[in-house]
Length: 251
Image (cartoon, rainbow, N blue to C red; front, top):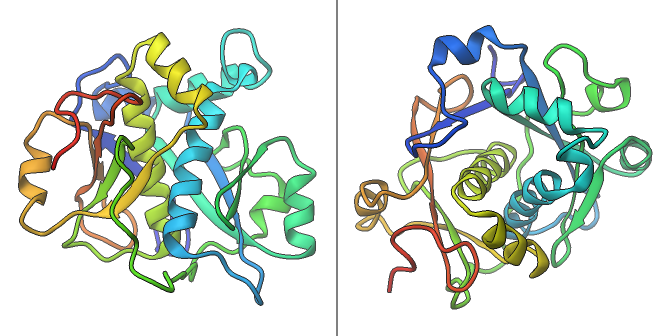
């Protein structure tokens, strides 16, 4: 798989119902979750805003009534989660963005970022208007260094020793948010959803990364198909009162 295909695949060190052997996952029909980030040439979003918006978009999809129970997207979501968890972030502007908005999905907004998440599609069955969008080269910057995460926010900590494009990092942040979601009870999920899924995405301090990966928190392990070698990329750390994962917030 080449870097331009950017099928971003991850697993978790957490123990949960969705964890299966690699052979079992590979034997299942393969689906991918499409995310489209709006990047207008004159006004691209800040990198951290885009990362956090992408993570929230995954949670919004997972919590949507259409994605659960007998909802119209539920079967596709179940098939996607039963196989390898693949997400692909593509970029759009102008008419491309308007065509993406016309397809089934949900647009999630951040401070300035806009990310549209679509229900999972077969790995080789992308809608035409999404398949034509660009994957590689999604680069964004933060005008100023991100501030400290707000008190109480769950945090998706990025591996400080790994460099990834903005698009791949958005997918990885989405993986981290999904692993956190899986660890929560129904009331905890509802409380987080009703609050609008507050969360932060930050690069972990270099001296804290090993402790984060060994603290019993959900850890995203990239499969190494694109951009980087296999290994841990994101640790999901819970907040108070929302997303209370084991370990709580660190000082």
